[in-house]
Length: 585
Ligand SMILES: Cc1cc2nc3c(=O)[nH]c(=O)nc-3n(C[C@H](O)[C@H](O)[C@H](O)COP(=O)(O)OP(=O)(O)OC[C@H]3O[C@@H](n4cnc5c(N)ncnc54)[C@H](O)[C@@H]3O)c2cc1C
Image 1 (cartoon, rainbow, N blue to C red):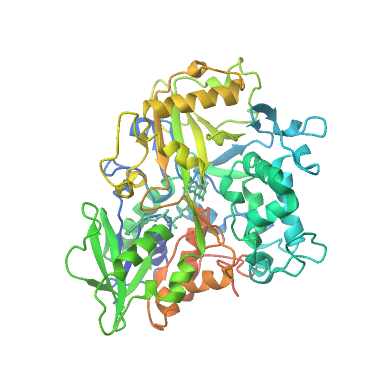
Image 2: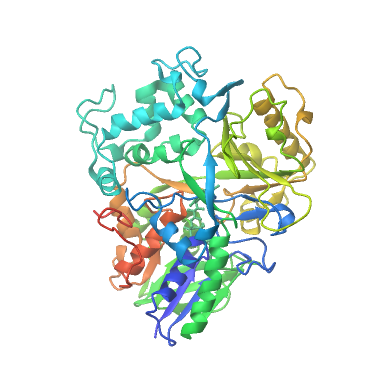
């Protein structure tokens, strides 16, 4: 008779409940509860603020699920290839198990995107010695795509020593700069994980090379000063031209379908299951070998409601920013004999800070026509093969990346609307848009930290934000000399999603340097045990401390690893010898 309490009903939390049930190892005397801060519409019937779950959110035009949608959170996956043993194995397996593989479609990315860099328009494939990218790089790094430059630095670091998931894990732990590595600062034999990626980029390609990589790659988060061993392995994944899949039913349909299967299996097996929304984990500790916690309501998130509760198995399925808020609240509970505040123990706290929080931002616009396919564009987009979502266009303007979703309405809604992910930006660019969230006549009347915007869903953009989007879209698509936003039609709807707001604090995470990633991945899963409580059954799951930090796959893999290693559940993962769920050390 065990109680399983899952804090956070995002991808990791829902997956934990789904796997506990589909393993058919529970009995009616066991119970599962999910405690979720948000008020997500898990049933997809209008009973919630937005579609689930966590950092996944399909936003349909005017919140009408029959209408076209744009993914304002995660949007795609890499299909598992059973021959090469690469891709997102657990996501692919889960999508199939949920019966959603029939909705799997290509997420078209062009390998010849339109670029707008330093005021110049160019196609990526036209960058050459004759027409280099507008950067004063010292070598010939501006004579090919920015991804080539990034790849060259990666190869110099890994020297082809990290080609599959097993050797990559090894490289995170022990990878050293190869004998041929040339640098004024870093010598061959230096542990790559103790080097910051920005530091080594500057060292190898100087400021202009770094700037080109940052601008032309589209993701600023890929070139921050994160763990160089991981960065060198990971950075190829987002390059334009990669092969991605998405779901025609929207990415949120993974989690509405998973939720209905959880309810169905719980009923069939007689296992009590409850989903408590609008409730947050406030604090958690160990009391003489028992896991105890306080919850708080979303109306009063800083005040514990009622007496402390206990559970047999606790899954903290929340991003690091939210876990740190729980650790903070726990820190101020009265100290008592037999009480261990494990989240604040030195080793746990050190490991919790092993990932860099990467704010990210999306702005969705809907139009009455696909103006981006019209003949008057001076440089037409490369859309020949696209039947649905395609992109990106990449710019150094705060828009950063644009994806074209078009009419993807699942229902028959009459007059179609056409969606565009007008800005997909991250890191410092998120601040550009954040200041446009309030209108020019507004001032803050509550602490910005109380702003829980991403829990609620896409928020309507202010007129100033819309104008700023339109003038940048006009320049990117019509040229730098454009002085009016009128080239872009008035959008029917514009909404933003700021993943930097609470409780997420980031869109995704990146391993910091000076950490042994494998060691952290292994240890942080069981923070109580890491703090010396050998029988503690508190587990941290989620994508942040995984091999796939910007992917649902990371959330599923860490959860699967906990269920397998600590609860002894038979795994649904295959090929673990070549595809470890998390790194082994
Ligand atoms: C802009 C963007 C683009 C992305 N692109 C992709 C992509 O294309 N493909 C892909 O696979 N992944 C993508 N990702 C990453 C993916 O969304 C995450 O990896 C995934 O959502 C992580 O799941 P999680 O369960 O670990 O955490 P989360 O999704 O963050 O879920 C955590 C849950 O915990 C809840 N919570 C927080 N605090 C508390 C509390 N105190 N008590 C109770 N509940 C709490 C939250 O409301 C949330 O529901 C993207 C993310 C962003 C933001």
